Amino acid sequence: MTVIAIDGTFASGKGTLGKGLAAHYGLPYLDTGKLYRATAKRVLDAGGDVALSADGTLAAKAITAEDLADPILKSGPIGAAASKVSVHPDVRAALFNFQRAFAAHAGVLDGRDIGTVICPDADVKLYVTASQTERAKRRHAELTGYGEELSVEEVLAQLIERDTRDSTRAAAPLKPAEDAHMIDTTGLNIEEVLQIAIKICDAVFKRP
Image (cartoon, rainbow, N blue to C red; front, side):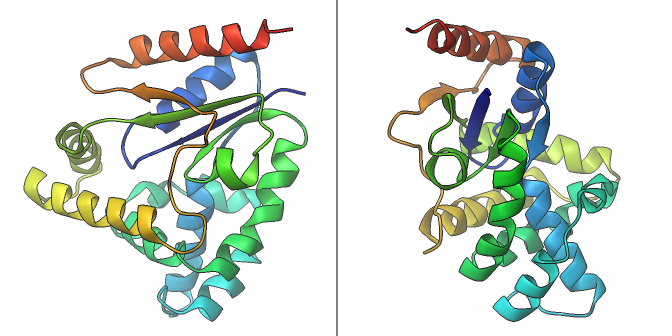
């Protein structure tokens, strides 16, 4: 059983990397951020409040794999709501088993607490980041591609707020696992990042 855990900052490219590694090694892939986005969407659809733990936990317990296919999960408003619902310990606990069950059959998982909480025994742990300016430009391009209208400056402000929330929350804060391999994607294209990660993974897999 092979498990690759990818953690990292928002819009750093960890999702693209996760898909690339999954395809390269023939492993299933899970974007765990979608679990929180789907939870946030369920809360909003029900007229609830993502700031309330009870609303988020109720939604998290109802999440199924089918919820993760909704394209609206990539939108800016859902992403912002997901960042707020993810701070609740009970929400994270409710989604823990879903992620562990996926990892039990091998795979690539990306998120913010995969190497530290979800799969601390993963075969390879990667931590992906990039400069805030670079990440803001990437996210801006993604959102405008969906038809959303906002400036790079607005995206940067949201990104800084999200970085702060992710890294300072009491439950499973974003941080590299002690044995994570660091990858800074600033100035690198998708293929360059993928090749760096493959080189790291191959080296780990070959260890006795």
